[in-house]
Amino acid sequence: MLVINKINPLKAKIGALKRKGLTIGFVPTMGALHEGHLSLMRRAGRETDIVVVSIFVNPMQFGPKEDYKRYPRPVQQDLHLCRSAGVDIVFSPSDKEIYPFTARPFRTSPQASDTLTRTFVDMYKLTETMCGKSRPGHFRGVLTVVNKLFNIVEPDIAYFGQKDYQQALVIKQMVTDLNMDVQVKVMPIVREKDGLAMSSRNKYLTPAERQEAICLYRALLKATELICSSRRPVSAVKIIGAMKGIINSVRHSRIDYIAVVDPQTLEPIKTITYRQVLIALAVYIGKTRLIDNFLICK
Ligand code: AMP
View 1: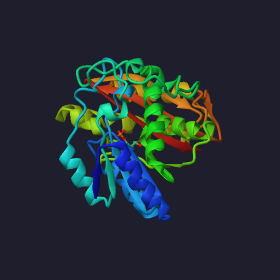
View 2: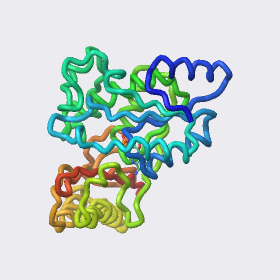
View 3: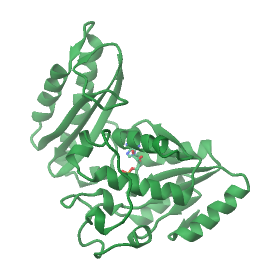
């Protein structure tokens, strides 16, 4: 497994592999890897010749009061996991390598996007709701870095997790809107035994909070039960009410949002009839913000 920190040597290596006719599968990550990330890497390994993983905690997608500084960075452990998942190349650039135009030092505070880059990618509509509403500028940071990484890695297929449903959707939209030559695949959410969606941020939870964190999954199960057991259309108000009941019964929880939306447009659905619906939520357990979602097909 090659570990490359600089853009130019990575581009040279990938160029040489492509000239041999090999296909590139790409898994962008922020590190602190877990089985969710590894499932994407293994899938890439089955479907493409060369698996490239990026590990980069992207300052541009963090808000000023968010966890950029304390985000876990277990470098050696991550490299070990990548090796075990059959990854060929890990791209692990410094902040300066990705954002050479930076006006302030990194790692002291997250950067306002205009001090990191002059050019950026942004999107209307899909980014104005759910996580985009709670985290202003977040998707501008995500889209900009993913665009840069796609230009650097030039993957044939890029793999994302459904865990970050809105992220995967906006990336697919960017690829369509900007005519980018990459196929985006979205893989299922990998969960702990008790149903908690795996996340690098689960590491922040105290043992008590870890127990409480199951409320997101339990709320999603309740929503599914309400939708699937009723022969008549169910109102979003009823679903959200039932989910709130479950989450609010947990001591350290605070709901950021619960969304009952169209899976393609992310526009709210008032009444669930016979079509697909996305139920997505973000909940603070203590200071840790967790997200999860179910795509339900009635
Ligand atoms: P992150 O390192 O959190 O930016 O995640 C990198 C990629 O892994 C994103 O495409 C995530 O959606 C995906 N991912 C994170 N957690 C999971 C999970 N539990 N199951 C599947 N994919 C995941």
